[in-house]
Image: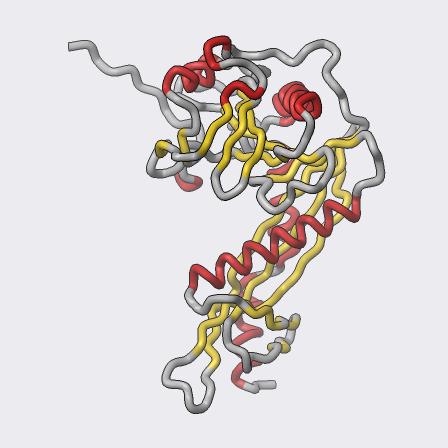
Length: 314
């Protein structure tokens, strides 16, 4: 019996795996495979020499953290109402010859479905109330995620100053498809969208190549493509990321964004000795995440401040 080939996942185990802990799950999404090329002509594509090189690249990312779980006890109600005291932030890295922080914003809030909840003023900061449509932990977490996404949009809009820029949003593009020249950047794969014979094209990608653009339709629709980043690993899908853009774009604009990202992203890929999620966690994203985590403040001090505020201590 032939011994199996072995490949080590390049990601630090504490960060999971690029293909999700459960591996790639078969998708039921609607596909338009032949948006750029018919399925029987699919092959790895190199960006042409005439590829658009944007004047500026803006990379937007956000982070969130639950500082404490709080409970609102309302007279006459049999059970307390859960709230999440959270900090979240979003920032922009501007790249135009060199990478620099363009903007960073921090917000705090308590997410809860309790209508009687009031702002908590702690010694270090205040936590205004944001009402959630649901009271369970998952609903509160989704509300926090949406607040972070809204803040990402705010900083993205406020920092654009050129008609020849490219905006890269870390994460899916859902709810953000109306922003011009914008691409969603997905570094972790959970679904196997393509049929087996076309997944073989993804496996054949070399660094700096992409698949043809195709269209995914789930609860929303977008054009998408896979790109291979530089990586030293034989693991399937190592160094592969997926990008997506609005399905309302003309075909030529979608192809322009696909070629531009394929030419751009390999040069921004992180290295394994510096980032445990290399190469998918791009160097500007890793730096921005580190800076935003610092600006969120000390979680132990914030938690202690919330305890003090709710006890009425001085």
